[in-house]
Length: 453
Ligand code: TRP
Image (tube, rainbow, N blue to C red; front, top):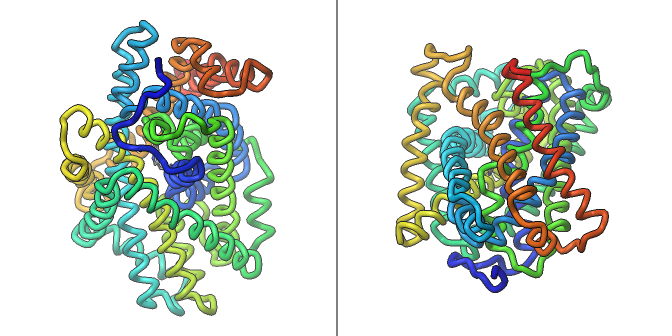
């Protein structure tokens, strides 16, 4: 019987605390850094449209499934999968879904914390007035200078990893919940201010046309995969982060309602980020296909020109730091929860251990941006490769298996009970999506891009 099962790590103090924490996990660099640069690389509106479809058809049902499994298992993803499989009389092999998630978490963190380090570095730079009055193109050189210097990069990366580890070491309520409750509302506010600025000072209509008038001839199999991968990445799905957060959720909270709110906020923030950034991209003469440096090159150009730009810019990078921080803690949490459950470590010890390991793993991607930039595989350096493989392969694969478990292996009674929708149209829609639509869609996209289909 699952009712009354408790997580040893504690529980969110309210439904709202979960919504903030899950939104904190979802809303991050994925929305403000990755979404704009992918949109730029993949030709704009057609990519945005496929992304929105992927969120609705694949992302939302999988998010409901992850929260549901987590709340039923009440443990770290590995142990949750093992417990639920046993309970339903299935193979213990399902725990490997949790193991793959743990690996994906480490790998994502290894490049995510590097970008997190950039955000902290940029707080210091904007606050110090480095960009004041600087010619737009020169801000690009500042970014290239940072990325090309392994020592400075290492310092900021280490700072960010320490920040992440510190929050996770304080536990679910004292760490995760507190951090999210403060940072998330603040993030939303500053984003609205920036959209306002872009409307007044950027090429706003050009940006809207770029973002919302699709040219489907620019859509390739690769960009469809990128859009789907981005849906998983942005919603924090496919590796167990949302599953772990679900394991701390009260049994009285409605899963459909909370997940709808989280996915809605995440999508809104991505679109707002696009609407804030592209008017400035065009106004300052940048190319949309800048790659990962886009936000870090373009926005400082705007901050350097606008009145009060030093303040607004500092605020922006503080909030980008917050967004990255509340997400990175969710990458570390499932690993730390597992270490506490299975190795009997204290939370502090577990966080230190996991943080150190992730830090060591990040050294490869970090050096691949400068000292080792000559070494590439499939035309990508290690940083790009890890980002590509986790987002476009590991997360969709994890999501596919989660969908199959929740839709086919978990008993119908169990999912009816957890979702609390009764057996009506809403429940049946979810069930069709999770059993058929999600697995088929993910498979088609994966097979298509590998050329197998
Ligand atoms: N969703 C976060 C972002 O958009 C990144 C993230 C946090 C994540 N936890 C995750 C991505 C788990 C995949 C899986 O920045």
